[in-house]
Length: 266
Image 1 (cartoon, rainbow, N blue to C red):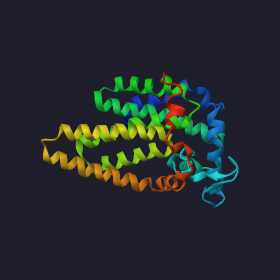
Image 2 (cartoon, rainbow, N blue to C red; image 1 turned 60 degrees about the vertical axis):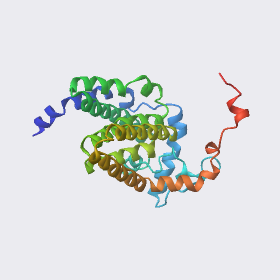
Image 3 (cartoon, one colour; image 1 turned 135 degrees about the horizontal axis):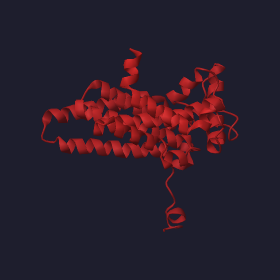
Image 4 (cartoon, rainbow, N blue to C red; image 1 turned 90 degrees about the vertical axis):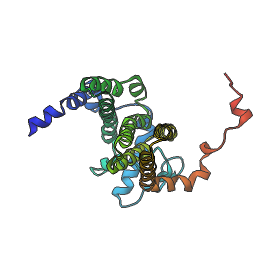
């Protein structure tokens, strides 16, 4: 049975090993630099420290003279991956490196899955998965984990959306909502907006493509509604946190037309 599994998933196993070998300094727990250390580690540690002491990570008195930690969309407060890692103890530098490495591994596996769905060739999918996981963006943005998280779950979101449009099955609707929720709760909000544009574009394209097939239109509308409802349920804590403190986020204000947009028109 074990040999059968190894044979069935040999390309995925080789892909994971190849990624980890290329990132051997992180595998050996070499400490990364910059934003991951001073921008994400302290916030994630606060979340884990609060939970392990029996408190919800609501108000963080240690950062920025005190701020609502649970409303920080980049802190990982509502990320399932962060919470799973915290089951094994407080979120330390080693925890960050594990989450960091998981981004590269799941990015490669996700692109392998999507590529194999599109091209039906595991060798091609292996090359694309490895190229995607170790691409210039992934390596060049390695200090910004919230960027990597977005790129990690993006192919998974697209894959299950494509599977939904192919089969209209409930399991693909639920998995689409689940992976989009993983994307949103972990990634920088800018990437959430980009994903929303892409997902809406795919739905519009499918509606146009199937405009003359009534059954398919019904399946798309019903299935799309299920995805949206399940996604909203999964994101309720995240959405509520944002709405509660959105009046205090200056980054959600409109840009000054004269003061910003025309200051560097090139």
